[in-house]
Length: 373
Ligand SMILES: NC(=O)C1=CN([C@@H]2O[C@H](COP(=O)(O)OP(=O)(O)OC[C@H]3O[C@@H](n4cnc5c(N)ncnc54)[C@H](OP(=O)(O)O)[C@@H]3O)[C@@H](O)[C@H]2O)C=CC1
Ligand SMILES: Nc1c(N[C@@H]2O[C@H](COP(=O)(O)O)[C@@H](O)[C@H]2O)[nH]c(=O)[nH]c1=O
Ligand SMILES: [Zn+2]
Image (tube, rainbow, N blue to C red; front, top):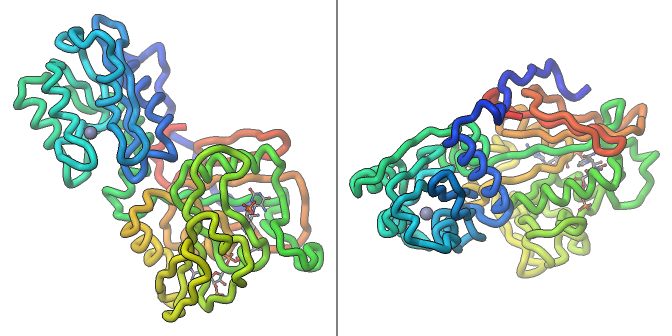
């Protein structure tokens, strides 16, 4: 077993029949905000709902990075703007108060005369951090903060991890056999440089969906040498992630998929004088003798990569687990048995999801106890 002493999840998701009206609308905000997953980063994926006399008259979520914020889209979606003077806007995160790629949402709310603002979570980002709330209150708006706060925290986990921990949100993912191996012995494997599949095609499609949701995907040197992986989104729709590859000595051949130039690749190496195979490959120097997980986090944070999925192998995954730098682990268990091979990582966490994907089992762990299922 790869999961040692899993702790039972102590949090229960809210039961809809016990929710207040404010909570119902906030839940709707979270629901629609998820349409932004995979496109808004490094901006947070915010959801906003506008309610007039108990009726939803407008909704919006954050557009792709550089586009409108959720509040702007929600306000634009209201056909009779005169109703705004008597409406409430619900939003998962404090409206912004600064000029970024777009003007401040707090200004627009004030300008449109919306008298009441209900906020899930105060924005910890240094450019906002309560200034949006202050601005709204100063303009005479009634502001309520902290509605479904924990659910909003879960929803904004990627953004919050960046703001508070100054590192990307980290999702570990692997597939293990029923007897706990992630790769067979080389003998069984043969000379072919391709992945040895443990999971079924439906699970593999789900992995491509996950890849489309994160801006980065990381793998270790041996994984590339053994599997020649593509690390793209071909069985789903959406953006390809940045491929982040460890290659201390630059031994990965230029003919391998990671150098096909079809998507960006960031090679982390200790070779200073890096050879440039194509314009989509970049290089960063790291010290392989020191705390690699921390160094990678620093580099990716500086590159504005809000989250990554780490797809192996054992050495790479285990080094993040041992450094306790991970947020979520998505572990597949297939039906085959290797008897011997490369063991799955050892991890402890809180089980937040357990599901069946055809004949594969998927277990999701979270590193912190606060998470809802
Ligand atoms: N079933 C599954 O889900 C998956 C299975 N696999 C399988 O796993 C196998 C590869 O796993 P594994 O051998 O563990 O290798 P990895 O892919 O994790 O690569 C390990 C290498 O990367 C470098 N490295 C990684 N982390 C660190 C660190 N913290 N500090 C220093 N160097 C680091 C080292 O390179 P160097 O030695 O040059 O210093 C190390 O030898 C393959 O057979 C692959 O098919 C891979 C991914 C997923
Ligand atoms: N073997 C195995 C996985 N292996 C992971 O998938 C990578 C291959 O990616 P790609 O070339 O894009 O299809 C491979 O290098 C390794 O990281 N993943 C799974 O979901 N299930 C599996 O059984
Ligand atoms: Zn805004």
